[in-house]
Structures are given as C-alpha cells and as structure tokens.
Image 1 (cartoon, rainbow over the protein chains, first blue to last red):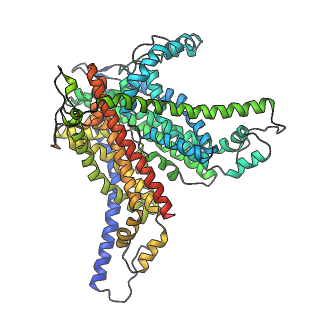
Image 2: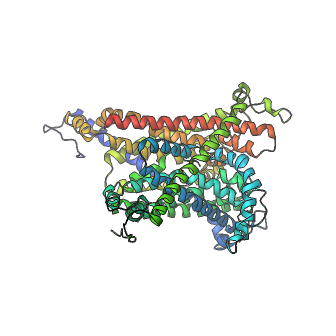
Image 3: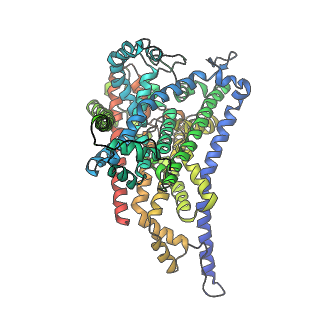
Amino acid sequence: MSDQTVVLGAGAPARVRRSRLIDRGFRGTTLVVGLGLIALLALMLVELTTGAWRTFDAFGLHFFVGTSWNPVSGREDFGALPFIFGSLVTSGVAIVIGVPIAVGLALLLNQVRGSIANPLTVFVDILAAIPSVVYGLWALFVLKPIFDSSVEPFLIGTLGKVPLIGALFRGKAQGPDLFTAGVILAIMILPIVTAVSREVIAVVPRDLREAALALGATRYESVRLAVLPYARSGIVGASMLGLGRALGETIAVSLVVGNTPRIGWSLMQPGATIPSWIASSFREATSVGLHRSALLALAVTLVIVAFFLAVLSRLLVRRTAELVSGPSADEVLTEGIYPRAG
Amino acid sequence: MSAAAGTVSLGPVRGIRRAKDTGFTVFLWTCAVLALVPLTWIAFYVVSKGIGALSWNFFTKEPAGPLNPQEGGIVQSFVGTGLIVGLATVIAVPLGILSGIYLAEYGKGRTASAIRLVAYVLLSTPSIVAGAFIWALVVVALGNFSALAGGLSLVVLMWPIVAIASEAVLRLVPQELREGALALGLPRWKAIVRVVMPTAGAGLLTAVMLAVARALGETAPVLLTALGNDYINTDIRAPTDAVPLRVYDYARTPVEALHGFAWGGALVLLAAVLFLAISTRVLSNRQQKRIA
C-alpha cells in the first residue's frame, strides 16, 4: 500500500491539504507512541542501572560472589550469591520437572483429535491465567503440608541414600524449602512451555511424519525421527522462555521458599531467590540509599539474565520456524501474551 | 535437513519396538494427567475454601480489629484494585492500541522490527522488575507508595501486551477492505479509524481484556509500588490496597480466621481472571471465524 495520498487535480484545495496534514499527524502520533515502547525500555534500564550504580561502584564483582547481606548502617555488605544460587536452583528444579511434562503434553496435543485436544488446550490456558498469588496460597496451605508429611520424607528415605545425587535430598522434611518452590514453579511454567512447544511441533510438515508412518515406523519412531529433529531448537527455546518465567516469579516462591539466604547442596533446606528477596526487603530499603541501591542491583542482575534468555529463545524458535518455513517467531511467541502469573 | 537422528529397521512391529511405542503413548497421557491434576486440585481448594468466606461483610467492610477478625471484610482491596487497574487501563490501552496501529498499518523495516523486539523484551521482563523500576522512579522520588505508582507499574506490563495483541488482530483485517476504503478517497487515517478498527472491533477488545486479566492478578509490582492499605483509599497519591496484596498478606498472617479471607480473595480473583480469559478466547475465536 502506498504511503502517499494521491491527489487528483493540480492545485490541491485547502481541504485536501488539511486532510493530508491530519493523515501525516495520525501516522506521526502512532509512530511516536510506538517509539514510546523503546523509550520505556530505555528509561527502565537507565533508572535501574543508575540506581544500582552505587552498589556496583562500592562492591564491584564482590556483589556477584559475596555471600553475606547486611544492610546495617556502617557495616553494609551486599553479596548476591545466595539469591543467584536460590534462583538458579529453584528454576532448575522447575525445568527438570516441568519441561518433560510440557513437551509430552505438546506432543499429545499434536497427535490426538480436536475433540480431546481442544478441552486439554483450554485447561492449559486456564492454568496460564491463574494469578501467581493463588498458586502461592495453594502451595503454602495444600502442597507444602503434603510435601512435608509424605513426599519429602519419601525422597529423603530413597533418593537421599543414593550416592552423589543423594546430597540433594538430605535434611529435614519440615519447613520451607527450595524443592517445594521448584515444584510450584514447574506447574506455573507448564502452560507457556506447552503452548510454544506445541506451536513449533505443529510447524513440522505433516508429510514427514506421514512418510515415516507409511514406511512402517511406529508413532514413537515417527516422532523421534521426523518431528523432534526439527522441533528441537524450538523446544529448547520454549524451555528458555519457561526458565525466564521461573526466574522472575516472585510471590508464589516467596510464600514457600523461606526467604533465608543460604547456599548448600540440599533441596530440602530453605533459601531465597532474587525476586523473593526484593519483595521481602524493599520496605526497609525505601528510605536507605545503599540498601535501596543494592536491591536495584539485584533487579539489574535479574534483567540481564531475563533479557539474555528472551533473545536466545526468540532466536531458537525462529530457527525452527525457518527450518520448515512455518510461521514467524513472532507469531509463535505471541502465545506468550496469554495472561501469565506474575 | 539433519533429520537422520538414527536408523531403525522397520520390520513387523513387535517386541522392543512395540514396547517402546506403548511406553511412549503411556508417557504422553501421563503428562496430560500430571498437567490436569494441579489445575483441578487448585480449583477445588479455592472454591471449597473460598466460598465460605464470601459474605456481605466481606465485600462491604474494612478489616475488623484483632479481637473479631472474622467480622471484617476486604472492601478496601476491591476499591483499590479498581482504582489501580482502572488507572493503568486508561493509560495503557490508548498507548497500546496506537502502537499496535503503527506496527500493523504503517510499520515497515528497521523501526518496526525494533519496536516489535522491544515489545517482546518488555513482555518477558519479570513483573517484579517493572515494580522495582517504578519503585525507584516514582515511589522514591515522591516519597511515598501510591495508587499512581501501582498503576504505572501495571502500565509497563500492559502496554506491550495491548500493542502486540492489537497488532495481531489488525493484521487479520483483509487488505481488500483497506484498499476499498482508500479507493473511495478516504484518507489513510480515516480508513484505519472508520474501516479497519471497527472490523477488528471485538479483536481489539480481547487485546484489552488480555491485558486487564493480567493486571488484575499481578501482585509483585503492585506490592512494591502501592504497598497496601487497611482502609478505603481513593486518593491516587496515597498507599492503596489491592485484592492480590490482601491475599498475599493474609496467607502469611498467623491469624487463622484471616486465612479464610485469603481463600475468599483468591476465589474472587480467580473468578474474575478466568471470566476474562475465557471470554477472550470465545471472542477471538468468533472474530477469526467472522473475518475468515
């Protein structure tokens, strides 16, 4: 479509000139508002980094490797390692538990007929719409008691005795812990990982699978030989999207994780994540310069990781789409706008 | 095409091949069950525990004193959520739709792809980061927590959602309609406002509803910016309560009677969000059918 209004007749009358002016004004307004999104992101980055600067200036790399966090005036020491640790561990548990289930569900949704797939999809969408505080409430009052009384004692009694990985499952079952937080995160990232995996699996040409089936492959073999090789990078991208969500999740985690800065092998111990720590200490920090700056530095750390993951997942999903010349990464990732818990 | 992940001998399907295939099918269905269990479980608990908390007082009274907590309510949370989300919607919807119009109708080349990329980046920004941003920018600068700050933190989340979703629905409008309008001599802006947007009508509404549904349930950014309040507040410059904040608060209180209120708040929240999510789905399906 051409950008210019074609004007018939030589001397454009005033009405046409005015109309052209309005046209340009409208276009200009939408452009300015569109650019506003870029300005918003820029403002956010500038505001967070300038706020965090005092901390980076005072502690440098120590901020990322230090293990003590002390806001007491005169004895300030800010090391973020326990929170980075907590975030990575809980998100790791979420990925290990959540991704296989999500991919399995995505494969199923691509295989079964609509009469089964449609209700399942609706259920998964609903799961995505549940607010994070509702997940948190349920995790605190329903999931945690069950984990404390049966699931965790069982894991400690069985896996805890296995060499090497046993170290992850030692300690007491009671109380808040990283494992429960990881499980609730696994449930929370399930919808997004399922939705995006499903899209990338759906773009694999049907004839490839049908060819495999025609050659006598079983369903499992057709998936392994004709679907997964194409969808692999897209599924990894979907998982990274899930990882980004898990890393940023605040409220549900903060209700079950214990908010105790700690680094250790066992998943059965309490911990703290970057968001949960920001949420639990912003009140005291609002009026104290250095403490406030340290929390903003935590936010910056989170932003860096989240942006890196977002760009990477976009590239990976796009690779799958290009491989089979399906929909663009944009279209696939639009799945991400369905209401998510935060 | 690096599809050759391995070779299989395709003889009769039996023995190990059949076992693997059956195992695979079982695995897929197990995944479906595992995904559905938490959903039904959560829904069951929220409804069964929440329904008992819903009463006239719950919707009309402020929290009562510590001696008889069960006689109070959380009306200030409903008023606060209305104020904060309303404020955010009023700001974010025009911004989002105008950005969507730019992306769908005018946007080409580098500028448009840059805006689109930034919208996706903002979309994947953890909500607590949006909260921390407004906390540093507005709360610290003005010296107090406020509904205004809460609303602005939600704008950060809603703007990119509305932009991307409205771009998607505007793109669904057939090109012929635009060409027809232009051929009739309508200027471009009028073709967009009078022809394209009405055609996309319900779709634009779903874009807005998606964003509102998201904003209603957000806790972390509102916590960092609006803080919460035990009393009704309608001043946008003062700390304000919200339903998710109240649920979060009551989940952590040792007062047993208030746990019921937390479930009640969760039930109301869940009902509102699900209503929006489901009607979004229905509307967008109908819209797609209508245009196609």
